[in-house]
Length: 296
Image (cartoon, rainbow, N blue to C red; front, side, top):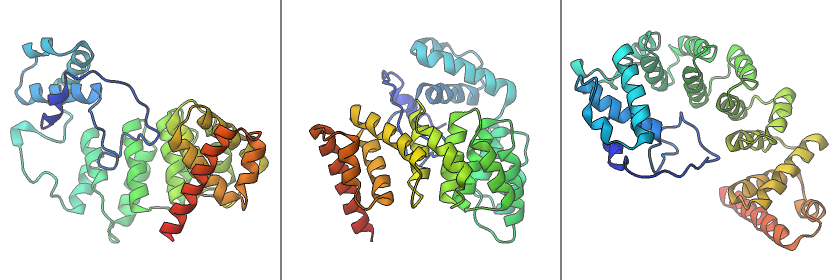
């Protein structure tokens, strides 16, 4: 909205699917560059704020940015769906009390709903109302609302029975990001059951890296796993070794260390004493142990 990201609008982009990628974690995993949809929205916002419905300078944008800019401007012009209103600009937009955020969470504007629920703070007097609103968002057909509701539930550590039941339903959602976030939220809320373990096991074979990450993250929280799950993890571990994906190698190794007293023996059998892979696996295992000691 400030336009700072537009300074980089002439950069060419290399697509990289970060394993920790989560579009709702704005401040936790900041991206080094804005992606093309975000750049498009920035340019559209700049035009919309000036009431310019056909900006001539759009023609000077790279084709990959021009198209999302036009699409975003058309959306803003038609819907006006923005938390920021250029005609009533207020420096105190984010300085609302919790009662006001509750009210904004029920506005028609999806943008206002998202901003509102992301500003929910722990409040014993309003906890039931917050949980009710977030449950409604979890059930929404709007994926954006669902994703941000999961993030807020995770942050507020809400684990009421209706919330947990709906999160379990979302682990089988047709949207990969929703599925992954639901599994991670259930893990962080300590609400993993046998069904979720089975779903997390299937996630290991996904082609989407963030889905694989969610599966390993969930399984790694368990004190032990059965042979079916272990075989799936072994496949994922081998794939990570073959592609030299060090982040995943570390993640898998940490899980093995939790489940086994002597994971080195398992590695030797699994890797047929392949020296190169065995070295990578052993180094990751040692790193996970050192990290555990440091945390302890």
